[in-house]
Amino acid sequence: MAYMDKYNNKRVPRGERRRRSPIRGFMKLFLATSFLILAGLFLHNCYGFFTTSPYFMVKDIEVIGNNRLAAEYVVGRIGLDKNQNIFLTDISAISAKVRDNPWIKDVSVSRLLPDKLSVKLVERHPVAIINKGGIYLVGDDGMVMERIEDYSGLPLPLLLGTEVAIKRVGDRLKSDLAASLIDIIAVTAESSFVTGKGIKSIEMLHNNKINLVTREGNISIITDGLYLDEGLEKLDRIEEFIGTSFVKKIDLSFKGQVVVI
Image (cartoon, rainbow, N blue to C red; front, side, top):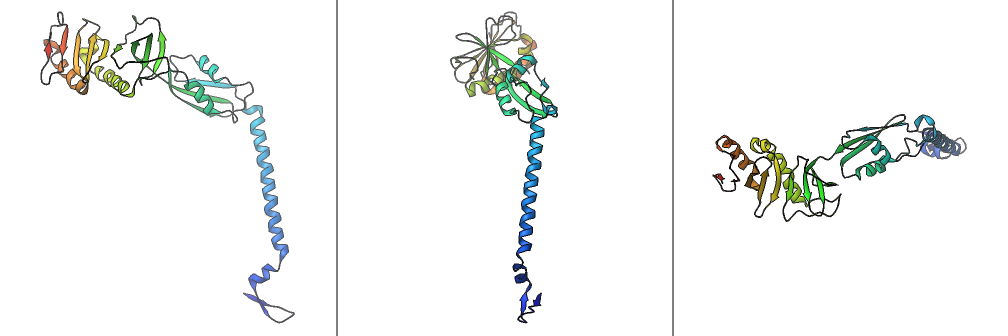
């Protein structure tokens, strides 16, 4: 659309007419700037309220999933200052502090407004013992969890073999050894013969062979680690036919047969 210029009797395009009105552009700029200033002041005031109000100071920390570790220990590891604001609390740093304990496999921290933190733990479970340069508990993911003085009263197998080497608490077993240990623990838990007698030790031999020694009867069970489940299933099927009173060794490493000595 166009209009007539009253001075020179020419038609002027509508868009050009708008460009000739600087007041209109100035008002738009003024309103936009005012809005941004007001929005900034509002956000600044909100930030100040949420980060300084006593209503949002951390007053309680709940610890969930802890069995081995006391809740007081976990809270002490977090080490929050008094009057710590919940929004300014670094939950990633808290997670790192708690996870530093070898008994902790995983941790998640969340804010429960207005004034509470929730710390959820997943603890490791010891599944074996290593006695090399000290007695150590080994967790269900291969983590060396704790050094102990005596393991005679613990119902955990002793892990043996030339590949077993650790230096200190917090170390991990070699990934392949850890995977093998976890697999062995899982498979033997399904065997009625092994669970009935318990496992005294697990020794990693050459050529993927494993030597399981039972607590009851001190029976040595030799099996191929690659076919551990098949070997133990075979043993369970013939369990009732084995007179274990005088049995010292059961070899399952031969395909298709069981050798009882």
